[in-house]
Length: 561
Image (cartoon, rainbow, N blue to C red; front, side):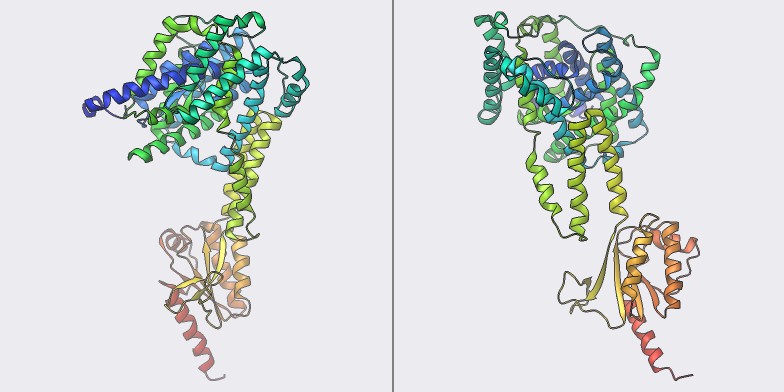
């Protein structure tokens, strides 16, 4: 547990209990709503929340992270489970539960294998684009419940067209209920953020059904919710399905891990402690295993509920344990209240939770950054980010959630290779103070006659060695010597070492001396182990340039043969 009982301060108790009560007021309606997104009975979301909260508190490393059903992983779950079972049946719920178990086992294995670095393989632009596409898809899927019309299946655009085609069938009572609940959630979030607007909206919806008889006016309600605690154990799913779920579960784990890790780090930074990515994987794995064994759905860390937890003054995971206890009370005694909950109110809770994720302003900022002149370092960084974010978003909107995830992950890896294969190679000049800097950025930096001084901003390896060689040969044209500053070249592989040796020989044939400055660390070691015959290696750029100038002077002063 992030904070052991011996270190717990009694003064924290009240803050943790109040935070737990506040989070419970948000978690219950949102868990019901996210279960609906996953296509399972609403109570499945509550089943998942209890063990997830307890087990994460034991194994996770964050004092503030709240774990439970979430929109992104719920939508992923629906997309995956639809391949193996028809929506609405017991088999569908069983496969949903099995996916939580498999996701938990995969995350637990990854954490024990210390694979926490995997989160870095999904770049932030790809993750943001994916979540934006996911949010838009989920919102458009909830709009029919807000209007009281039939939902059209398909991708985002097909569902949006279906909404437009059925506008004439809108039930005014359903629409009024949904809009009032949506206004309540958004209004409380804007003006009274400490009040759980989701719970207020749910209470108003239930009250409206009871007082106005809305269920008799065509307003759909949640209906029967099983009271009591869930059955424990593995779901009855064919053995082949278990193995088939392993691949999709990896995707669910990566998205859930990346989203939860981001929330955990945000509040750890604010409160002065550190997050262990491997423990976060173990915590995520334990939470999903517990959720699945308790007949629940996939879970992950929630930024919105963590924000509520932190804002309410939580100090430790005792707040999460408080939420778990209150959720058990809900399952035992309060499910009857939620049976009268209008589906339009649930849709309003989901839409309100996702509106803040529809951040087109972020895409606009990526686009503005991508307008940097082509070929500059800023362009090299920003253009791929903007392209990847848009591609990940469109992948979800056009091809559905799971294909969009695959597109996003593939783009993350391609971005990594693309950037590292194009290190920025700059020509250096000496300032009046003696510093060697990029001549393009410093007007007072002067070149040394007959000597080209070049810096490679990145490691030298098989994917970029040809590109770097071309840049170095271009810089050496018409010069007497070429100096390569290795200070910003922290690593080199066998291909890079071979390229440097071949470059030295080629330049020698053209009458150009090749010098290496700052052959630091691993670069020096590998050059020596591979017998790279570089005769002119110097500790600093200044020393290398001085040697090149002296050699040129000696050649000029030498008597003719």
